[in-house]
Length: 62
Picture (cartoon, rainbow, N blue to C red):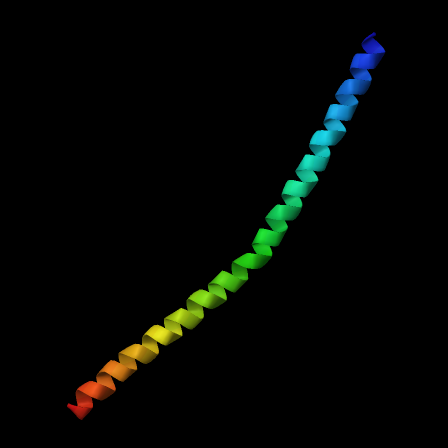
């Protein structure tokens, strides 16, 4: 009986270990997505600068 319980806990442990691994994989994939969003932020920041430059040039034209 106690042997059965021991095997069950080992099974549960290995299952939770598998879950750990998959969540770790999800974490690392989301980490890879992170730099992309940073790049997106940088490009939108550059767009903002461009629009400011456009505003100043139209101001000079006026």
